[in-house]
Length: 268
Image 1 (tube, rainbow, N blue to C red):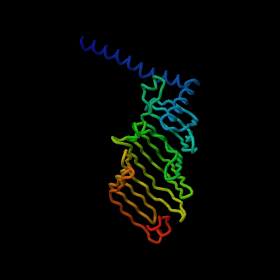
Image 2: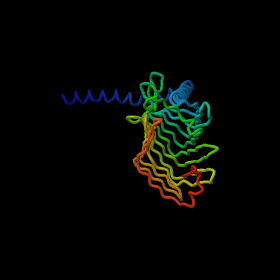
Image 3: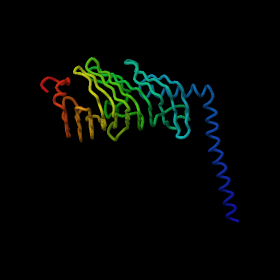
Image 4: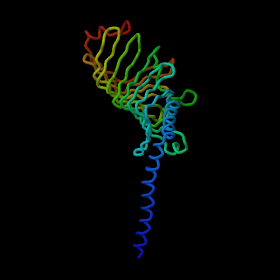
């Protein structure tokens, strides 16, 4: 008898949970299909990108995906207010805080960009159109406004004219917050670089970089071309002026006849 009552109690709870499991997705899907809701999703996505990254977003379509819970924007462009086009992407997926979304806002936990064409503008030795990740208070520890950023199967073009330009294809890039700054992992197996001495083929860029308030760390970095191989292990450089310094091991293999035409500083 006791077992029968227990079974009835569990069955009642199972029916309640089943109702919510089916009812919430169904009601959410119906809500998202409305024109007003689609406009609201567009505004949420564009506003989050503007507020968190400092970029203007033009979005083709936005959908709310329930499993995994995310906001998916397709056919979008991202523009820097000063330097213009930063990226075009097939898909940008935002994994938000569910509680914030229910309150009508959007806090980004994770961003995934797939099939993007990214463009970096370098002027005066600085990248001018990077997303604006705010540092800590008083210019302290650098931070990112999300847990992780993933850029998958994308193309990265660097415009450093009149000195050089280059492109990496099939790029996988991962940016994350660390205990004392920002960590970046990147890999590409196809690309080129153009400079005053000619054009270089790049066959591999694979490495990790960590940026803190006072230091640039390079735990590992491999760059290869048919004529050049550079490997860095345990590298680091101080970012505090006027102090500077470098540590780590650099292994370089190169073709001397080829290196002669590289645009190296005089006296190198």
